Amino acid sequence: MKPEVKVIVMDNGLRVSLQVPGLHDGLVEITMEDRILRVVSKQPDGCGPFESLVDIPAGYDRSQGKAAYFDGELRIGFPKL
Picture 1 (cartoon, rainbow, N blue to C red):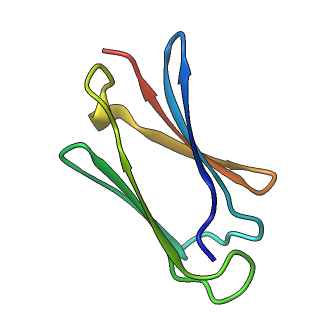
Picture 2: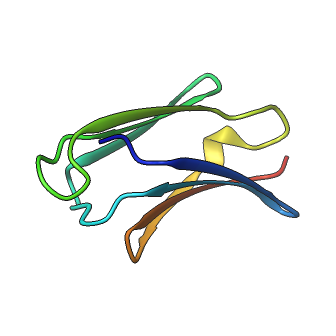
């Protein structure tokens, strides 16, 4: 099941948020190619396997993206340029 993806514009940057309960370390891959953020989970349980693609617009530092997992939510933030 593919998780819902929210893109939130904040004063200091952009946050991509995915609801992925039960996500385990080592079973998710986050990559950035040009403007496309790609999140892939290979885990068979919890949120199950999925692939999500998000276009990160100009104006954000795509090379400085940081990911964190909080209470079932994967957050990937990008600061403003």
